[in-house]
Image (cartoon, rainbow, N blue to C red):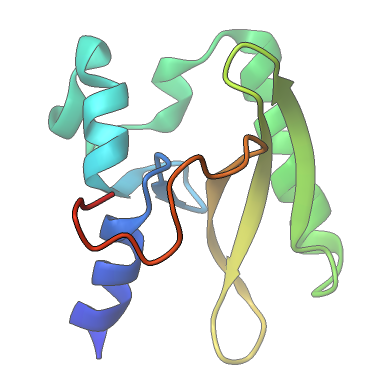
Length: 125
């Protein structure tokens, strides 16, 4: 089943960077590897996400993790709107079967509507 879950993440056109609770980057999907190529790309896996952020951002990330830990109901928080790319950005808690926090990831949700035709088999996305 793990291959199926990885495939879901890998097929997402938005960057997905998954971290454990110690902020170690444990996985990056292909979109994230491409997006962060100038910062090391795939080589970032195994490193601390905190090394990619300034102190103000690190403080916000720590605050979000504290909020995730406060309640099993705290699972997603809006962190940014990128007007240039017309997307909203969220931090999302990752929990085990018992609801314990085991990590987090950043979720990009693009607002631009799809411009392609529905069921257009002549090209792939």
